Length: 368
Image (cartoon, rainbow, N blue to C red):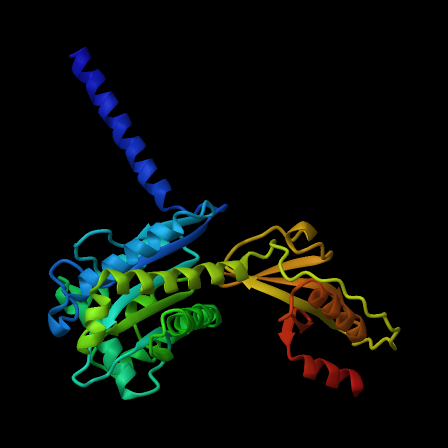
């Protein structure tokens, strides 16, 4: 009896440790940039079958190559929604990304059309600009119908109804700019590195993008229904080249967010000119120098030596500011200092009684 009790204790301890280990594996490592890679479709959902090729297989091969390349970077953690030919629900894919508190979500697919359409296109979440974008999103979202009890899990969402997409763009609004930036990097790489035809960055209502709470993109790597393009995507060479372009885009995106990397630092050798103070009562000006999903201590060593750093959290995005003054002429000097340190895109923001207002409105009130 004592032996049995000992075995039970060991088993319980093992299971408890395993549960903790599994949970920890999904937790965000604060020292790493977490990328969730999503190979579209899988299992009994083959995706597009244009020209006899299977979208699920091509997407998986591209994703695995991206992951292998990213994993060579010690400061990047890669999580896959699937690494083999299995079916994963849309909500399951989004949950993996959200549970990991990921910095990026990248979903790879292949396109199809009943015409000679060809080329790449990368989507971010938004309202459809045209019927074709709606049809693409509709096709990708219809995987919902392959799931049991989909009515319960997707809260009445209907992939066939344009009205169902109207609210999809709202929750991802905080991440739209960052999503577009990554999408642009990807499409630019397809065009410049691989000489592929780029159809551009587009917006459409993909359910999986709506439910991932981080910058997210869905990449359509080409049309399997266009025989030449399908053959290219089904080849080792094509998959290798497409994965490289996406990998490089992710690394370029990450580089932009690594706020403590002193790239493009230069010394401002211009002389400083004294300007007339322009005090605005009850208004505080700050210079926004960065926005990131990464939380950094507001210390000068994280921001290229700039002092007086403050941080504000909006949704899951952290905004970082330099300076704090009611003197508009002074904040413009701060902006020049930030640009001299490498923050070329920094800009002035204004707050009145703790609420953000337009800078023009603040200056107008000062002149009255």
